[in-house]
Length: 339
Image 1 (cartoon, rainbow, N blue to C red):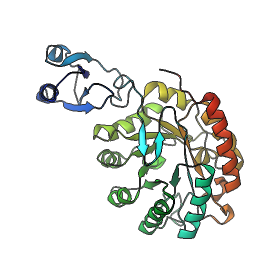
Image 2 (image 1 turned 120 degrees about the vertical axis):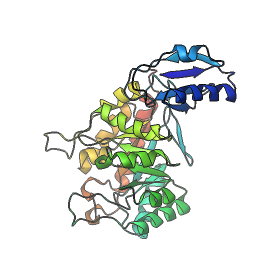
Image 3 (image 1 turned 90 degrees about the vertical axis):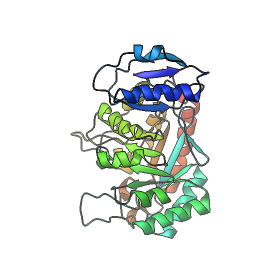
Image 4 (image 1 turned 135 degrees about the horizontal axis):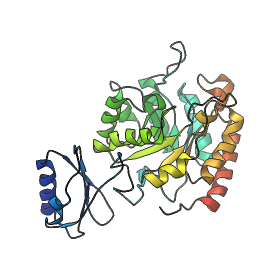
């Protein structure tokens, strides 16, 4: 249920509706809007009677929500969510590019790549300080030392930084250093971590699980928003299929489906989908043509020496070409279709 307030509703009238909702044993979640306040009714065990709210002062309407993901759904919020991170804007009408190495390996490496991607047009810098790896013997990241390097990149370039959090124990640390906290594919259904992300003051970039349906992915976003954090960015990064010609299979159909179902911005990570450098540019062009709100691309100036995912990392000159090409496509296809 979504209780829609009049434009002229007073704080006292809004508070009265909240009390009625909570008095029924439900959770009231005010939802920010352009010119009016709406209040989501959550944790109800069955249908909620609209008559409970229609007669209350300041209430315009009470609308049933049919989707299992309530706060994420366009039924709850028709206007697209726009997220501001430093000088970067993520959402409808913008093409936002996040770029950087898979892993932070040292200060010189990070700064060299950051200068390259900033010059080419990236608005945010990515880099892993904590790395979830399939093998326990692979490079696991520099930890807090890597986070400090990321903070130095931001200080020297002005680029906001995006990095992954792996567990509940290190969330406070990552939150302190990062501008955007990433929840990776392996943690998409780590519900304790999602709840902690929902209490964060940072925007959350939520990657789709490698075998997750779109509904499961949106329900993971619901976990975050249900805790109060409405700054969620979705990221399609490919799903696991039977193919061997790429690391994963990029599901570009997820872009229009998610944009129809949800008001949250959606980006695409072609690097992890492809796993191979030669596929990253064409997949990036396709993602922007599909009206994704942005890209998250891995770049390394010496990929043959990279400690993680060198085979899928673009050379700086390839990234410059990518930026030129996707900007041209965005000029043609960048205006979102209304939903």
